[in-house]
Length: 288
Image (tube, rainbow, N blue to C red; front, side, top):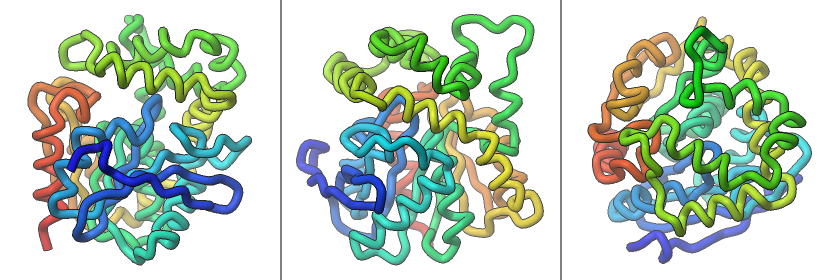
């Protein structure tokens, strides 16, 4: 099936309504996007998984076609949203893949609801409390291709002041930053879709909320220092971005860890090499 053939289900999670894309047949697999994207980022991965899995790809709170709220953007709160989505769809347990900041949500879900996750994939991310703070700390030599956005977006008022009305330019920087080729990696149609989403009232501030919660997320993850995740965890990264550092990023947080480095890809796995990414996920989620 194609991405356009996925249905959209609207799920009330209490103080927000989430748009959730659903397609395929088989064991449930949840796909959690990062920022500045929404569920569209899975357009080339989800159909490849749908042959063997029921794929569930929500627009998380504040993103895409989902409700924008004043708060609720800590990874623990977003994990609570996911629990309610699975309840509404009738699933007690699922495999979960989280990308970028969505990986933080996926870990929070596995941490707070350990009986509800079969296997966990974390993609292109280093966990708060396990190195993310260092990645966002300025250092000599920083330039336009560095991670300055972490600090800016951790102050939502500043992010809105700087980028409201300039969402397209911000997206162009994001998709150039950390790409494999150093050029824009998404189609014009998808760029326009992301720009429309980010320009909706409140979405830019909501996205900043994902970053502003990082220090709370680190406190919430402290328990993993003493008791790492015990379920099987696959860390996935692009060869020219997180791939070479996956073991270092995740070995302290997961006791049953494997890794997959995606060739010819930087940060934007779903657009740079969706075939290899989908194969890695499918093989991992198919294991007993």
